Length: 507
Image (cartoon, rainbow, N blue to C red):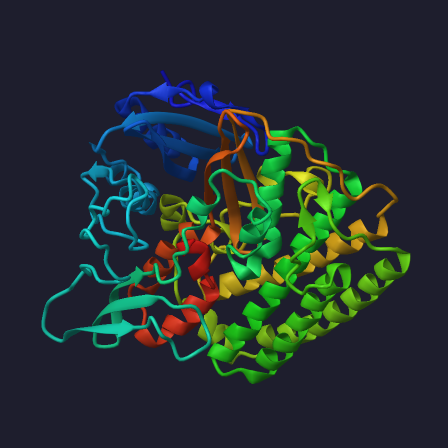
C-alpha cells in the first residue's frame, strides 16, 4: 500500500472529522511519512497531542504538485523509532516532540531540547537533557570539533544590535566556520498551551503577537482556520483587504531586509533609503486600520476596517510613490559592483539541501524551488488572483536579496490591481460556533514563507489542540548549513539574508 493510500488527502482550509484521520501503527506511520517525503512531499507539521496516557502523533505533508495535504496519525507510548535518520526534515520536529511530550524518538542523531521547558505531559521534566526543575536555555551539550587550531566562538544571546535573543556556537578553524549550532528558547511563552479551550477574547491577540512582524500573516491563518471550523464564508471585499494587508506586510519587511543587507556590507545609501521606505509601507497599513503592523484589522469573519474611495485613492498614490523610491534605492544595490561581489557565493545553500531540510519562503525560492502557498495551496483572494512565484537559482545571499526584490515588484502589482477592482460588499460576517471534533489545516504564505496552523476541536467545539509552525521553524537549520565553510565574519550578512524569527520559533 502506498504512502498516499495510508493517508487522508485534504485541501488547505477544509475542515475534516478528527476520526477521519487514518490511525496507523508506528511502523506504518513512519513509512508513510518517509515515503511521502521521498515522493516529493514535505513535512508541513508533525506534532503530538495527548490521547489518554499515550501521545498521538499527527503528520501533515504538503504535496506541491497536486496542491493537497495528506494526514496520518499513530499513537505511541514513550519510545518509538525515529524518522530523522531517514528523513532529515523531521529533525527539528522530533526534538520538539521529545521536549513537549516526553516521547523518545530512538535513533535520533542529536536529540536535545529546542526551547528548554518542562514537558506538557503531566508537567513532567522533559527527558532530553533536562532535570526535574527544568534547565536554562542553551544549558546543553554542543557539538564540538577538536584538532589543532580549532577553536570555538560563542555569540549571544545578547547581541550588539537591537534584535531578539538567541545563542550561536561556532566551531572554527581559523576564520573558517566548520559548524554552527543555533540554540534558541529564550522567548518561550507557552502560547500553544495557552490556546487550549479557545477561542477566547485573548486568542486573536495571541495570534497577532506570535511573531510581531507577521501579525497579518498569523492572524489570517488563524481566522481562516476558525472560519473553516464554523462553516463561515468571508465576503469578497474582506478577502481583498486581507490580501492587500498581507502583501503590504511583505513589502515592508522585504524593503527593510534589503536595507539591512546593504547596511551589513557598509553600503549606506540603500540602507538609509530602505529604512525610510519601509516606514512608508508600514504607514500604508496604518492608513487602512490605524496600526502600522495591521493589528486589529484581520478578524474572524472578515476585516474590522473598510476603506472608502478617497482612502483607496490615497493608498494607490502613496503606493506608487513608495515603489518609485524603493526602485531607485534597490537599483543602487545592483549597479554598484562591490555589492554583488559581496553578496554572490556567500552563504550558499544547495537545492538538494533545501529539499532535504524542507526549507520554505524566499530562502527556498532563492534555491530555485518554486514553493509558494499563494500558488500551490491558495486560499482567500489568492484562489482568484495569483501572484507569479519569484525564484533565483544560486542559493546565496544575492539570490535571497534578489528574490525579495522580485517579490516587492509583484506585490505592488497585486495591490494595485486589487484596489482598482474593489467593489462594494460587506466586510465581515458573524462566525458561529465551531464544529465539534473537527480538524483543519490552514496555510498562508507570510513574508518569511509558509505559515501553518492546525486547529483541533473537542466535543464542545473548543480548541482541544492548536499547533503553529512559523516558517522560521523550518529555516533555522538552513542558516546553519549556509554558514559551513564561510568566513565567520560573514555570519551577520548570512543571518540577515535569512532574517528568521526567534519568538516565532520559541512560541
